[in-house]
Image (cartoon, rainbow, N blue to C red):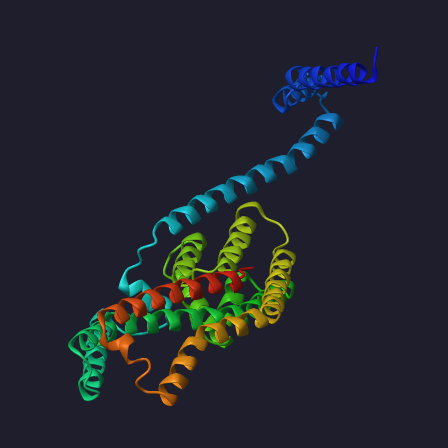
Length: 332
């Protein structure tokens, strides 16, 4: 028997063995049933000290079950909240921290549209550019400003939120009730943490439950940090436990997240600088060419083919900027 036949026989035996193991090996479900049958076949504990020991052993299981049930309800509410992506204008204004009505917002949008139209007419723009500037001034710029104010307010909140949680930790350790600690933050903390905790305490004072008040707080400030804070308070209220230790751990986690964001921002600064240079390079080159030879680039603006080239170049450039933005945007 030559060596090639021996190798084929060995490979065949290995293949058959592997296939048999895959088919006949017990699955995870079978292993779980075996373990359940093994534990279920035990005898029940006698009464007296053994029964007390069994009850003591079942207490952590009951508490764990309550915590899991609370987390499941909170997760369901979180999914319902995320499903409601279309926020009303009043909710957007509230998240941005603007104390104005919807009517005032529309009036400001109209004024902005008229201002953009006046700039277009003063600079003698074409009809297409004038109409585009009017639309951008009435619809685009106010929404952009609203989103900018919302993000800036959320950054300020995250910056002061860990300090506010530490105030609760120190208050609980000194013997103060949680509601009193929340009132202290709503009175002495920095903005916008002060407003959010003031509205939280006012919601509890008028009769809402802690869970409902925290849910409204999350609607006003839709951040993961606020969601974590609500989960800790709700679980502690329903199942008990050391609230000071849980909040202290949460404050530590929030500070570590902030530190991680700073490290990521520092490490991605080179990529951001490269993206800025690549994004501004075509405009800089076009400006310098126009200064050196004003007639050289005019066919791009005066001919139909040139307009199509500009539209295509602008489209691809916008796609490239979006791709670079997604590549350097890392969420913690």
